[in-house]
Length: 211
Image (tube, rainbow, N blue to C red; front, side):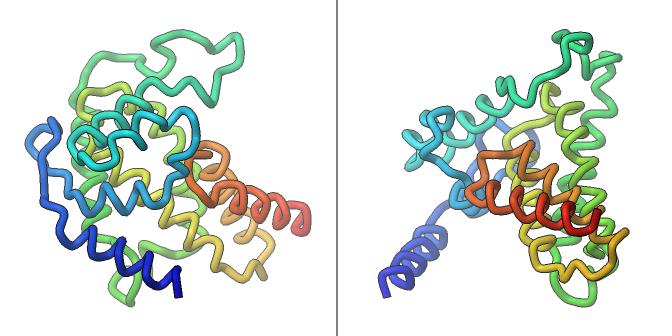
């Protein structure tokens, strides 16, 4: 009963939040999307302390969340690959700007669920995409175009991918390994999600069985 009341209060909280702009350029970050993401993160992690403290102010919490991910030092690089510009071979922001724009567009047009989006959400492609996106995150996170709106859309999308991959039956060895790899990549690369440990354990279990 308490869980039902908490859920109702959370949904009521979302319903009264305004749409706001938090220094995110031409596009607008919706408060409802931000607070959905916050409900998926473990805000008790010490590194997210500033985010938790700012919880009641959507503009500030969006800024603190973006600051955290842009300054995050983990996962690290092997000694031979270190360098402040390891993911920035060029300085042309045109590619980063376009990628961010297309990413937002794709997430809006393919929210998941229903026959209209079944091809975009086939499990094997979802697993592959989840893994490849961890590299794309590293490529573009330092760009000024990777703003709070992009970050929230990106993390919510990664969470949705992992949650979807957890529902797969795992009967096809080749396909299942790619799904498990996507689940593992998400869990390891984004330990801030509440379910990351569960995802990681399930991914490793599947890999050990399939191998």
